[in-house]
Structure formats: C-alpha cells, structure tokens
Length: 577
Image (tube, rainbow, N blue to C red):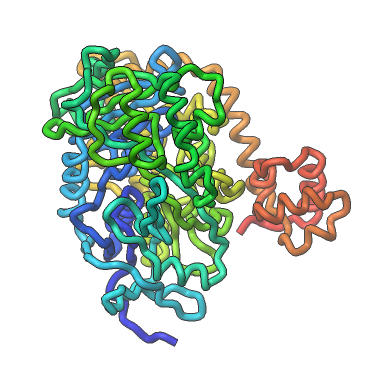
C-alpha cells in the first residue's frame, strides 16, 4: 500500500482542449493542479480545423464560458471570421461559429492559463497511473518522476495508441510530428477497461497564394459585432473572407481511381470515423450520385498563407490528393503544404463512466474528450470543464457537478455518452436536445452562471460581470431599456416570444425530474423481474441506468419494459443515492 504525500490535488494528462479546460476548472475551485503535457508550447493547439462553434457546438462554447471557461474568450482573442449559422431560423437552433488565427488562439489559451493560481504546467509524458488496489494515487512519467494526487483527469485526445495513415504510409503519433502515448495506453488495456478504436482525419493544407480566389464565391464575416463571450466587449482582430468551391465529376473519378491507396478502404483502419464529418473518399463512395460536394476554404491566420479546405478530409496517397486538388475549381494550381491524413486511436467506452465523468473501475480517475468517444474541440472542452470540476470536488471534498438534459447541452452530451455509448465519434447537434427551446446559445449565461457561482469556479471579475448582467436583465424585463446591451435585449425579447412553449416544456421537465427520483433496483436483480425480455435485459444491462428517467432514455427500451421497471421499483421504494 502506498504511503505518500500528495504533490497535487489533481493531475490532468493532456494539454488539448479537454485538458486545458479541466486543469483551469479544477484550479478555479481551489485545487492544486498539475497539467502534464508532452509539449507545453502546443497547449491549446487547434490540431484539425481552425474553427470554434457551429450548430450545437456553439451552445457548448457558450455554456463552458458561463462557468468561466477558456474557450470562448480565447476564440474572441483569435477570431478572424464570424458566422452565425442558421441565422434565418429561431435563436434556439442558431449556432455561433468563428474561424480563428491558429497561432493567436494557442497564445490566448496559454495566456489564460499562465496567471491561474494553483496551476502548474509540467513537460513530460505520462507512462502509467500509480494505483493502490485500483484506486488512483498519481502518475508516473516516462522520465521516472512520480507525481501524486487523489484525482487524475485523462484528456489524452488521439494520443492513446495513436497511428497516422496516409496512403501506404504508417506512422505512430497522436497527430503529425507528435509521439503517441503508448505506455499509458498499454496499461489501460491491461486493466481490462472497455477499450475500442475510433478514427478521425484531416484534409490537406493549401498555400493560399496559389488559390485563384477570383473564380470562387466569397463568404464574408458577419457584420453585427457579436462575440463568443459576453466578457469580450468587441471584436479584436481584422476580419477575413472565406470562399466556397465544390468537387467536380473529375474529382470523383480521381478519388475512385485512387481508392486502392486508401487505408480506410483497404482495411488498414479498424476504427469507425465520424458520420457527420466523413472523409471525401467516403462521401464519393456513399453518395455516388452527387455531382459535387461543397468545400469551404478557410484562412488559418492573418499572417500565414495556409488555407484549410473544410470538407475534403482524406487519407489517400499524397499523389492522389494532389491530383484531386487540381481538379477543383479555383484550386487548379494550388500547392499542398501538408497532405491530409487519418488518425486511429484508443477510446474508453463512455458507459464505463458516471455523469461526473468518473471512471468507476478506477476510483479517482476522470475522463474527458476523445478518450470518451467524442469528436470536436467544443465537445472536448465541455467534458474537460465537467471532469475538472468533479476531480477538484473529489480531491477537496466539495459538491459534485451533475448536469441534466434540461439545464444544458453539456448535460445532454454526457447523458448520451454514459447511457448510450458510441458506435462512432459523437458530435453535438441541436437535434439531440429535446428541451432545446430553453437551451439557446444566447441564454447560456443566464441558465448556468448561478450554478457556476455556487460551485466557486468563477473569478471575481466574472462574478461582478454576472451580477451586473443579471441586474441589466431584470431592468430589461421591466421595460427599462436605457443602456441595456443589445444582446441582452434580444435575449429577453426571445424569452417572451417562446414563453408559451417554455411553459409546456417546463411541465415535461418536471415529469422527467420526478422519474429521476424513482431509483431502479440493482442490475443484478433485473433477470428476476417478470415481463422483461432478453433483448430489454441486454439493452438495460449495457447502459446500467440508475433511475427510471435514465432507463427511458436508453435506446430501444420499450414503454412496456419501462412500465414493468416502474412497477417493480415502486414495490421496492429504493431511494436515490
């Protein structure tokens, strides 16, 4: 048995979007935190596309910001293009999205971390978790350093057993030119955790100076001045335009002819990729009748000519990628700076987690980001926030954070993950939220900031801002509009517009919360419940719901099975833990 002095309260492994949010959140709650990363100079790097936000994703960014998180403020410090998606529709389904200057975004994240009290940045690679009878006690680095803590957050991104694929090229790595975390991955597999493989990818980066912009349809930045965080009073950088082009029939012919070079189609990649962001070869294969697929050409910086062609993620051979690019309008003479590639990596089945993102099999371990089977910066940041807050809660004996589907998109995502698991990388969509009329991106601060203050995870500056905005919001509701910010006025107007629907939705939420108090008997007893089919038993056992409400959200569970569970639970009258 270990007898050690804890060097830290919380150790966070990984310096990506999940890890940086987790480390900052835990420190804001008063924990002594170590953020362990192979490359401190790469903390906050945007390893794929240069954008933040979008449909559903923008909601997550605003919600993270309501807890005084980093992503929205860093986005505002680096944004060079703003676009409100679904602008023609209601506010509930509109999604704020920015394109960021990569270098400035990374610098902004690091600038927000540097002054954070209680946070120490350590350069190194995690080799293994230090365990005492499966309970975590800290981390051993590959350099042999023992770091002790009572809680650890795994935010490893695509680095656990990471492999890169491009044509017949094979490399080990979490992303290009960065080594994988193989030793930690091997330990987690040896612990018999439910581990699988997933895949993601990235398109070739282009030299913007070689693009014929005059042939393309421009897309300008929104002019109405909105920002990701209400803490940002205005936009900080010049805005640039994007451009739109499309693949052609010639492009598709080149891709079909080159499929033999694709590790995805050749069977070298086992992991499933994201359905909502497929590779271009997958698009051409699945949607062969389409005449073209849209491509958004997104500048990556103000002082760098690199352009990100959003929509043509690929792992085809470099020569095929070059021919493919030259077949696209406006890109006939484009030069590839870095060819696209696919990444395959380990993830842990998120059904092994509870709603705190705590890993039951290893007490004290929390997981956030792609290790939980998700894709996207925003999903990672939101999980990092929740995992970091709860890791600090465990270390310091504070209140845990459990968000539900009625309060936030973060709650929707976590509930989906821990009950349903994943068969492909999970991406947030507005359609996933049944209470989306009240979960708008514009009212995230109003919905969540009081909880954030109760948890003690906001700065004095943020607290003053929240209180000032709350007072302005009340004045606006009373019809006093002098000196009220435009975004607050619109929020209050939208609340009034949705009021009849929100009343009806509140009744649905109340019914859901009543069912949350109906606790289910232990899963070991379910086979003794008459009336549950083998199929229902299999679905329920896999999801392991704790309450009737959770059982109702397990995919494929029938109303008849729920009625049977309800009757059995009522007989037992087991209180919720």
